[in-house]
Image 1 (cartoon, rainbow, N blue to C red):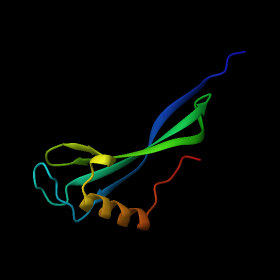
Image 2 (image 1 turned 60 degrees about the vertical axis):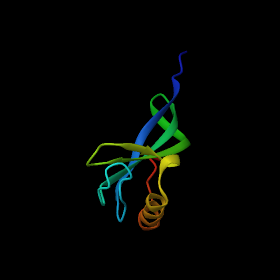
Image 3 (image 1 turned 180 degrees about the vertical axis):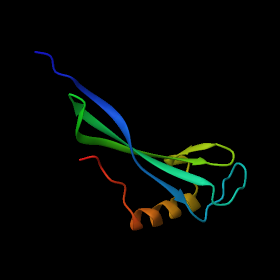
Image 4 (image 1 turned 90 degrees about the horizontal axis):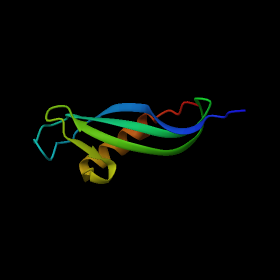
Length: 91
């Protein structure tokens, strides 16, 4: 009998970061933040979450930042957006 067990990342949320300025191009309110969840899959069905990661991309210059590269301004905006609307999980 063959079992398929793997890990896979799925997009679980996307939102605009308000009141932020891109450090690269200095454009105001241009960030889109995406949240990705890594899940253990059994026969291509997500069973349990393993980790969650976030990235933000400037819609003007297309520079991408990981969460450890976020500025204080970006972190405050992300916390505010998370308090309003949490990212959902597939299960």
